[in-house]
Length: 269
Length: 312
Image 1 (cartoon, rainbow over the protein chains, first blue to last red):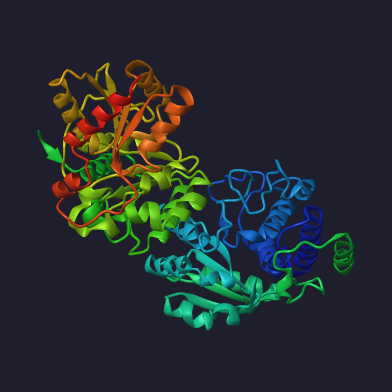
Image 2 (tube, rainbow over the protein chains, first blue to last red; image 1 turned 120 degrees about the horizontal axis):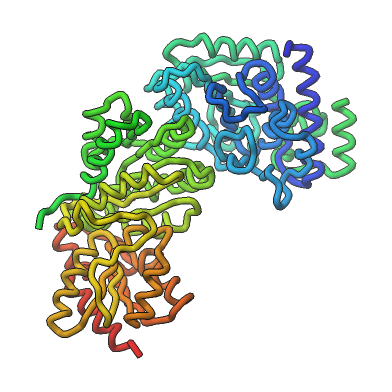
């Protein structure tokens, strides 16, 4: 898809997210909406995958380390054709394959189960290492939250990625600057981010995370990296696209009621 | 009797498999000399990954490798493999049902002078609660080798408890090893001693002592803690009417608990447990510690008499 098409697709994804959460009555809109443009650019432009052949060995791998943002992943998978769109409305229901946090045993297109923060980047390192070992042209992407960077395991993984020169690995930080208890800097400061990753031997790219042109350029730059893994630090707005959710920590893990769902959908028309 | 540590059975199996299967890879967390995974590294350096002192990442990276079709064997001390990285084992590996194999070495008090921090006495409890996970506790070098070979054949996560100290080799190359099937080591009708790991040897010694007092003890080796061979345990309760469990581990949550759960649900019979009781380990020589924590054959004999007194 080109940028104009991606913009349309991103809006659709945002609508899917709101509808899913409105129906489910619980879930995480803030981080799903902040990551929507990053995810749309990835799934509908950059990622080499075959939704009708989810286990195709040559596919690029994606790991959603911030598993609570399952709604944006499910929407991207459904919009890509992994499963019917109608299934999105079963989110978080008993018996649904769309668990509150992604379960790879239940849903096609999810590489590994996540939900406990800090774990996904290690898996991505293993995937990238496995691809290198077999000399496979496979890229590995991992989306992490900024609050998630407070987990020690993230830095264990970061250290090992550069140690093994995993230039096929790209970590995307959804830097919306909010976590459950407030501003990231106030809860537990993680900044400066680019310097930290650089000190750990990574290539760091800083972008505006809602600018699809910058997003695609960053993914392309990551592909050109030699010897070094790449981190894309994407400045985003939590709840992006829905005015009353934007930059509000309160919308981290709360679903909109009927009225607010309608209001949000109207804004996303 | 020849002695060799179970950790060497693990690496010998890895090397054997590595020679014929390119998908076998090994990882360690800066303990490759202790766990013996170094021996695999020496043969197949391109398929060995040192993750450094980072056990959570160790299991995560192994998970990723398994998703690329590799059969990763990740080793470190069992305190770290089952404790430090427990949630990675739970959520990343077991919940995803990934084909990751974990070698937890230096389990139990036989770890010796390193003391409590390094003596895993909780790993059975920590691992047997995890769905999808197979938990293997080999009793000697040969069984450890077979357990490691079997682990590669199992589709899904496997945890293997290994030890530092050389143990007498009780089994032979021909002794079968079928995961999930307890092994009858000695027939007997008065009492059954159900043991795992290093305590299988002590149990067989205890059975010899008991014969001298005309007590005919059956000895079963539970090399697979999960899935547990319920059949062999129920038959033991029914046929001998009393059970001793013996493990180099905390009895609460360990083999003692696991066997008791089966017995009370199916065929209630008196059970006594030999093992550590709500305590940490301590520094000392392996042999001293076995005595200090009452894990010797003579301790098993005492427990047998206690349970026989309760037998109806």
